[in-house]
Image (cartoon, rainbow, N blue to C red; front, side, top):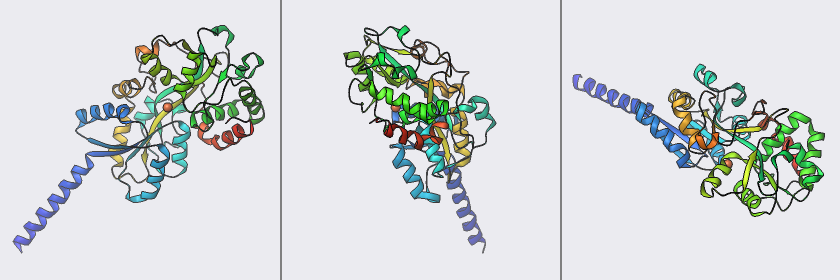
Length: 333
Ligand code: FE
């Protein structure tokens, strides 16, 4: 009997040890590539001893995987880009609310889900870029003005299939209503210099090469390209400074609905909003920290300061379906 009890005790202890060990890890599904997240996780492990395991894939397969795995998922956290995608994940029921005074204090409400299902961690502006050879910045003013006659045959756009443009359009609908937004988008489509681009980098290269004079892309693509090509004849312009401001979107994360280590995931998420982590997370991709107490990198700061649209970023998700249909009607391929 004694021996059996001892065996039982040993069994219980080893089970407990396994449980404790498992609690010291967080499993992350990420649509950001390895080199953009690994430095953050390495710093967290060095600081806390908590192991962060992650897999990377595109957001749609990751969300589908979370749904399929349901309560059996090993994933504690989902990291993805664009408030439109995070909102989608929330709608699909794969995220759970994380109430946190730390996150609330570190990240402005407009960059968080109103249900606390996700928070932004880094920001990117989707702004106007222009040819320094063929455009004077004084000729530029607003996103809306790119629909005017003087830009005919001079504008480049990325495909409307990309969530970034759907989110931009969603915020235009929020600001102007559907009818006026459709007019603006039709104006853009009429002004296109060439077919829509599959990605932002190709679009920036087209401006540099003289294929078009202006376009709309995310700031970090410019950062990357400019680093490779310091003589790039393209610069950012900050539109709508006299009204609602520049369209800003984010990369962010949420704790999964069935997280096996929800408490550890919350702690990691909280840490990712602190100045210590924000510099790394935003810096590796030339983004703006979502925590306003943290300065952007020198390179990003060199692009100048601007007023950002104060609209809640989740509007990008709420109006995504409407935006997609409107872009289609307006002929934006
Ligand atoms: Fe991107």
